[in-house]
Length: 106
Image: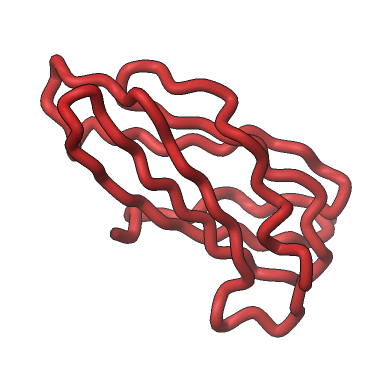
């Protein structure tokens, strides 16, 4: 499910922690126990990145309803699709996706 907004753009040398807030997906008392992250080139990207799957790292931690992972060193001009499937203690799963564009800041 689209998370409702995209991540702020990144630069090619940037390493950044990305997070999704699953408050609307899980009960208040349920917490995230695991999260699986993926990154890929978005269908509308004019620039390709054959190693797009390697841009997202292992989860950096899950706190309550927030899942986080590191995105690093994207290819200039590439538009990435970032997905996260979070599993809560109850066994319930939820998936969010958003986009991030790798660009030079002026």
